[in-house]
Image (cartoon, rainbow over all chains, first blue to last red; front, side):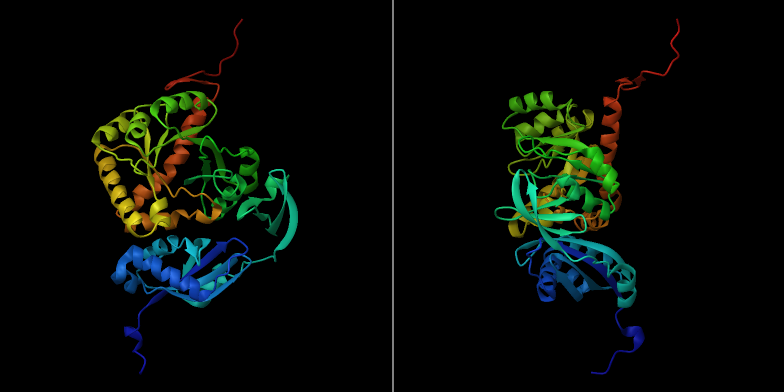
Length: 159
Length: 234
């Protein structure tokens, strides 16, 4: 179909979103999109969710650290933030979600707020609560493998 | 703005990790609210220095009945800067709002808990902060969440009407469950709170901490009476 004339096209805002999880989490764009739709529908209802029109673009995640751009209809950024806050698990993996900033273009969003995922992670033995454990380390954040799960720590906990 | 967190071993992340993420999200501080039977061992000052957020040594007293709670409050009040009481039953909610030594009545609507005008007036008179607990809104689903939203609304209406003091928290058990202040404000707005209420509730933890630190300082005698700085005369 022919494109709408410019003044009739919906105006958008783009949110730069940081996503965090334990290092073994396996999450891709589709999974995150699905959970975000569920979260929006449960919180805002069908009508509110259609208004916000949340679309996940450019999702990238590795070793529990990721970032993405979420497209939102102009004027619905606050409900979109609320829906993002309610994304608690993806595929059963607990996730932390935070909006780093918003912009009127995808490019502006990426340049200003994204691309900060820095160092690669390393894995090392540490002593946590008097037991030798293996930890996935990125900068000063330590994700320590405990018996069934992970514990979050930082460099300070091993001084 | 402050957030009150459950740190390892009560939660999954250490105090340092909570503080690190809280700093990244723009909080001014975290209150450690570990339950009495699972208290974290940490160096608040060292963590505060490293991550640039205030770390408040608090605790959430969890007791089976008012008698036991009374004993715990007596024991721990002097040890911690901020003392919350794990609410959620009629007897414990009642106990908390009638004790001015309790700073915060945590999640009064959890479990079997309920709240009414009598408790709201007592909370106001004893300046016990009532907690608006957003954890079920953020992390529960289905009927449980609908129930929690209904309870939150009831609590808000009673608290607003009697102008009782309150705090707001997402009650995170790991750094992954922390949410930034702006996100919590947006969420509060969707479920009927005003933006200013949400911000005030998040700031209140910090104000409480500041007040209690002043009270615990050596120059404090009682509200309005402080030991001044005078020259020794001989």
